[in-house]
Amino acid sequence: MSAALETRGLTRRFGAFVAVDAVSLRVEPGARHALIGPNGAGKTTFVNLLSGALAASAGQVSLLGRDVSAAPQHLRVRLGLARTFQVNQLFAELTAMQATTMALAERAGLGAIWWRPLFGMAGLRAEAQQLLDTVRLPDAARHQRTASLPYGRQRLLEIALALAMRPRVLLLDEPAAGVPPADSREVLAAVAALPRDVAVLLIEHDMDLVFRFAERITVLAFGAVLADGAPSEIARSPAVREAYLGSTEVAHG
Amino acid sequence: MILLHAIPWAGALAGYWLFPEQLPLLSAIAIAALFAVSLDLIVGYAGLVTLGQAAFFGAGAYTAGILAQQGWGEPFSGLLAAAAVAALLGLISAPLVLRAGELAGLMVTLGLGLMLYEAANKAAAITGGADGLQGVEMWPIFGLYRFDLWGRTAYLYSLAVLFVLFMLARLLVASPFGWSLRAIRGNARRAPALGVPVKARLTAAYVIAAAYAGVAGGLLAQTTSFASLDALSFQRSADGLLMLVLGGLGSLYGALLGAVAFTVAHHALSEASPVFWQFWLGIALVALALAGQGGLLGLARAAIARLRRR
Image (cartoon, rainbow over all chains, first blue to last red; front, side):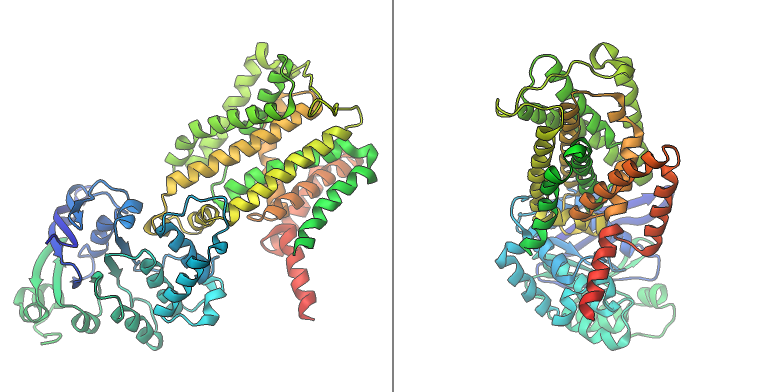
């Protein structure tokens, strides 16, 4: 069976600096996979290479067995790869309903239709409500400008928009980042409730979340893969302790 | 709701009987409004700022003008030709504008506008150069309604074209396509991550806006039986943007309102003091900018909301 997402020798250079260095990674279908690494390890660059936001200097990305190395971002999305952003990338002036419905229309291939009103498409509206139910965005928050929502709520919308793409592979770039502790439970619940047939690659700093969520962990350091394995192996690995944890203290042994 | 939409159009139509002496001015407003709508589509909805929209307006004006001068004076096909030429020009220039970054793209639109202006100036054999295009003769509309000296036919014709294209634009901005443009304007990083082909959508919006501007230019040439370099001038691009900001960016009625306010103010103030009118325009712009976003339409909406709360 082909991997949900696979990279071979994926590399990105910025001048002389190698941000991502020949990374080969395999994410299985339905996986709960975490990508961790110290600050500056190249995690976000790697995500940008996967999603197509950045062009790779070398190497390949394949999605569900298909080489998408040359495909632009929007095509990778259509083939089933969606992502969230480390810092919210939302539409400040649109409401959650508007943004979600628009995203669903795009997913359904209706984005180029110009002769029918978006909000006349009853099916899409119902689907948008459902999706916002899934991430538990309260009703009252759905019809406000996104910019006026608290950050935690915006984070839920960030996830809802990615889910609107009906992904087969979902890249979550630090979903809990910047969320005040009081709201983080909602976000974590939304992450935990992701459909099991979707492969998830979680990029995260928060070790609690990583060890609770992941069934497999890849550690990135200086742009290269340092370790790859089950959470228990990673927690025991001396190399990981040294590079990532920076001490002999084990995070979750 | 429908009534609210009917008011501006009923008012525009009433102008035909209320101001029989001012019909050429009313035609000028309708044409300016169509131009402002074209700018609103690309600047207000798609978020792509341009300083060269007059290039398409002028291309449309010369296309319709030259067509009529050369012996084909049928108005509607003339407008279609104007739209087609402007759209083609848009399609050719879109990759150049979109390729460059934000500021660079702005410079490209400015450069293309200036280039076309000088080209038309040099090509005097075709365009009449600085003297303008003479001898534009229009056929009657539907073979029945001649363009008269008082501008009656011209106004109703311009208003009808504006109405149809305005309604089409409303359809457009409410569609998934229109919402994807708002998404691109709102966040150009997120839009492609939601499967939006940003370049293709912006190109489409740019071409549609170009066609709209082309029709506006065609209307001007047809209703005044004249086309001049003025149609291609930077001033026209800038005026269009001023109307938009004045009326309210990103709302089609704002474009209409801005065109009316700007043209009427221009007319009234420049009659009072031909040179000094821009001073007053400047004051109005500063005041509106300070009063908040949304231009005149935004102010009106805020006022209505305040009244309702009471």
